[in-house]
Length: 405
Image 1 (cartoon, rainbow, N blue to C red):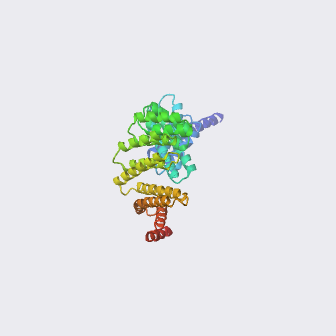
Image 2 (image 1 turned 30 degrees about the horizontal axis):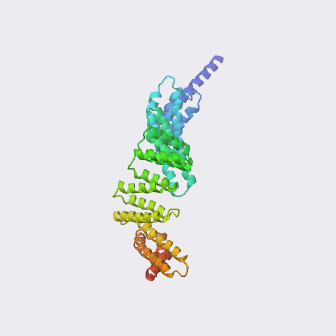
Image 3 (image 1 turned 90 degrees about the horizontal axis):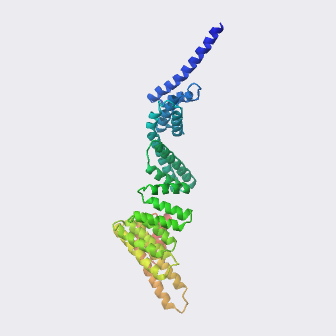
């Protein structure tokens, strides 16, 4: 009877082991037949049972099942962390695979896992952009941080698979910069620069971090110079360098850049709008001398005119041109109002000149209003002009529009 009892115990252990091995086989079969819910249930049981939890095959199957859960539409909700669990399972399988029975197959799966992490990073990046557009900075930073981490994981996996993917490094840098992880962004941008990554924006981003985060103007100027040498006709890089010149009072260099920008592409209205806007900044800068501001005013007018000539239905240069004339008129009126009472002739001349500028602004602002009828800034500007110039019919019309909006 005692021997029979031992035999029964032995049979029980064999049955239990077979039962757990059957869980692995069942998981494989369910997976093969597309029943990922059943496959997950079986493989989860197998990974916690002492008879199968240290078997490389168990973890290899778990990786296969979980990566398909992540990539599935029907079963994706089975586990929100399926991608990370797939990666952890593959790593565990490789650790346990002392006979290299599954490692070769796992290595072939690595680009798929890497691609999944890359896609996850892209999805989170898009979520960050949506949150940013909605001015939800907390959600945006959270999404960009998640995006950065997924891109980092993708790069790690690609690296293990022998793939040197510079594009993923670039996206790590972009997501990190938007997440406010400037040290990580700078590290990746420097890596890309050393790798000769062919994208001019890495110089803009790197210079921006040096200037705004590290307060290192000289390093920022050095990076821009290096980028401009490599991409001499890149307009975005040129205009960003111009921003730095303007911010640092290096006006001559800024104006030289703008002249160069006008020669780079003579057919793109957005370029001439950007040039006009930069000259506009010089016009508005009261620390500059009057001759420089007048010259910038004329250059801004010419640039906006060119942008409108290339695209008559372009709102921004129409609005800016109108605003440029209005601001010029306002400045003259302010000066006139400060004149002594005995300088009536000078006062009248200035007011007449101011009104001329206001009249010049009207066609541009009316065109801007036609292009974007709901824009209140345009309507308010027109109301002020019509009031000052006593254009009562138009004033009543614009007042009615303002009241209805």
